[in-house]
Image (cartoon, rainbow over all chains, first blue to last red):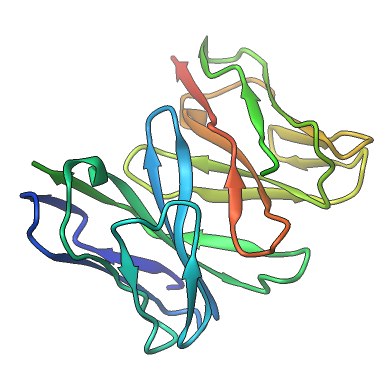
Length: 115
Length: 111
């Protein structure tokens, strides 16, 4: 089954404790992206990757890191989480991203709480 | 940033009613997408509209792209509880690096 998987689905952590949210897709997509979703602010892009070893900042990259060592994986790293990073996080991937028929496939989300 | 404004923000209706939600902007778009997000899940693409004036139908859902390609609407006929969810419109940004989403319309259909 074609899908984007994220782990963990739920995470409660404390300020300053490094964490990684994994994202994997089995569709051989070149484009991958991370979004956060917050009430009243909607979905905002954190980082994206157009291909292996090519990553760049989105609209809200502060406090986050990413890597793209292989096509299928795109982990999101919070080196020193803070309470304002409490949010719902989505990983997405896309084929044909530069064409008019683009479609992003989203993972099921990771709900992160930082206390 | 090409902002998308969605209205209404919330909609609560009874099963069988019809409804329309809107996605508006002052910018012209080459295409617009509609996604539905159910609780506990990620958004799922419903449709992409590309041509001004285009109308697409997906069962009881009808999507329209404005003639000037600045706005879009989603009409649901005879809503069902399974239509409950967050409806988002989105477009690809000018740099071609991200989807820009509206804040969505939360629809609740009760039986």
